[in-house]
Each structure stands twice: as C-alpha cells, then as structure tokens.
Length: 300
Ligand SMILES: Nc1ncnc2c1ncn2[C@@H]1O[C@H](COP(=O)(O)OP(=O)(O)OP(=O)(O)O)[C@@H](O)[C@H]1O
Image 1 (cartoon, rainbow, N blue to C red):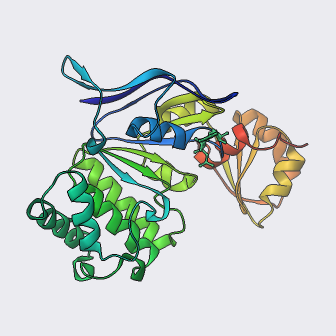
Image 2 (cartoon, rainbow, N blue to C red):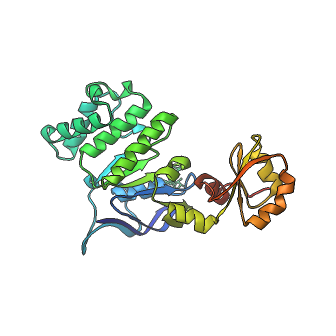
Image 3 (tube, helix red, strand yellow):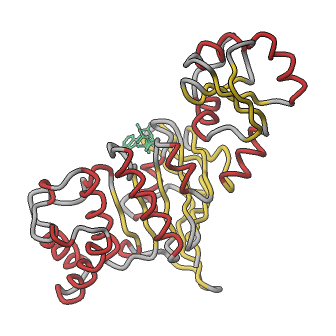
C-alpha cells in the first residue's frame, strides 16, 4: 500500500500555496517534508487529511491494483504541541473521546491505548490531565493516542519542537522503532538534525513546489556533492565561511563544510593555517544544505 499525493494544487485567493505537488509515502519509511516558513507544508498535510480540498490533483491510497481516496481515520496525526488534544482532560478521557469520534468503543480503545502508554513508559499517567505532563511526555502521549486509533500512516507536524535533547532522542528512537514495525511516517520539521537522523527520504518544498525529493543520503550526495568537513580549533565557522566564499558552509560553531574537490580545498589550506584540527571526507549536513538553498545568498 502506498499513499500518493498527485499533482496537488491549492490557491488561497491570488496566492498559489501548492503548485502541483507530488509525493509518495510507503509503509516502513519516514519521509521528511522540509521547507521554509510558508512553503506549503501544513496546507499539504491538511489536504492529505481531507481538512482542505485541493483545487487540482488528488490524494489516493494505492493497494495492489486498487486506488481509493483515504479516510481521515487512516491517519494518525500529531500536531505541534499536542494542540489537537484537550490539555485539561486526562489521557484516558482524551483517548476515549477521540476513539468515540472515530466510532471506536471504550473497550476497543482503552487496551490499545494502555499498551502504547506502557510501551512509552507513561501508563502511570493514564488518569492525569495532559497539561500535567512535561512537553516530551505530552508528545509521547499524543503519539500513543494516535496509534491506539489504529491508523495506517502517521502524519507528524513538528514532533520534536520544544523537546530537550534527551526527549528528542527518545522520540527519535520511538519513530525509528515504529518505522521498523511497518508504519509509514510523514514528518514536517525544522529540526533538521533530527530529520537527518531518522528520515529515509526527504522532500524539499519551496513556494508550493517540490524542489527535490529522494533518499536523504543519496540526495545530499547527489545534490550537494561530497566534500570535506573541517573541525576548527575555535568557534569561528560563520566568520570563516563568509570570508572564504561560495562552497563553504558553517555546520556548527566549530565545524565548516567545504563542497568541492580535494585540489580546491588544498588551495585554501594555507589561509586556514592553525585554524583546522581535523579534515574528513563526507556529505554536508541537511541543515547546511537547507541554509544554502533557502538562506541568504553566500557572502564573500
Ligand atoms: N487559510 C488560508 N488562507 C489564506 N492563506 C493561507 C491559508 N493557509 C495558508 N495560507 C498561505 O499559504 C502559504 C503556505 O502556508 P503553510 O501554512 O502551508 O506553510 P508551512 O510550510 O506549513 O509554513 P510553516 O513552516 O511556517 O508552518 C502561506 O503563504 C500562507 O500564508
């Protein structure tokens, strides 16, 4: 079974928010949907969920030779900050309420919800109001609820937003486990480090169009090319990238990436005398690539 978004168009008055977007999501994979603010990510998710109608194109589930329009209940949704749940109600009441909306009886929902909560280490919070949980716990509880409703695909909007590094890692591990168990997961996020770690494929959306889409590693290699990562003695990456010019990407305060062949890098090395601790071959990070595509034009 595959979820296909095919040539989807959406207008808001004069604004063309989506200009023919096509994407595929398969079971057992995580697709990262990336793009700057206003690129059209949320609009696309709303169309997939059937909350907005497209002006053109379609969203279909392909199963064997059959194709049909997916139903809302086939998607488990996690909106940023669990804002699709009632924070003053207990976890269980939320689960029973949303299960009821989906036509599921308490007898069906409760054991499944409890099993997911137990797996995420939250069963003792079953009767606690959602608001009394930490942000990371709330995200896990919301995910447990989404899973308890037996969706086929998960659509997660900014799932790691506001999480501390430990909670972020925990959520990443959960997503990788779920993927391994066959869930197809669409993830929108500005947390590119996380996306790089968990996604099998990424799609870059920009002004309503998919600029590129493909396997994360291959895309980085093919699109950006291979190059060299330089670990710096001091946190000067921004300043050096600006001074050295195009082809130089600051990846972290003390990490620079050079997109280009060794011969070209060698020509720069005298200018970096004493600044570099280590040089290694690789592909640039997703974040530096994103900044190169959508960030301000390179200086220098
Ligand atoms: N209901 C609406 N009416 C009018 N314009 C809208 C509406 N919803 C979205 N837009 C516009 O469509 C464009 C895409 O918005 P969308 O929210 O899909 O972007 P996004 O990629 O999710 O951004 P962000 O990363 O900030 O969440 C924006 O220019 C936005 O202002």
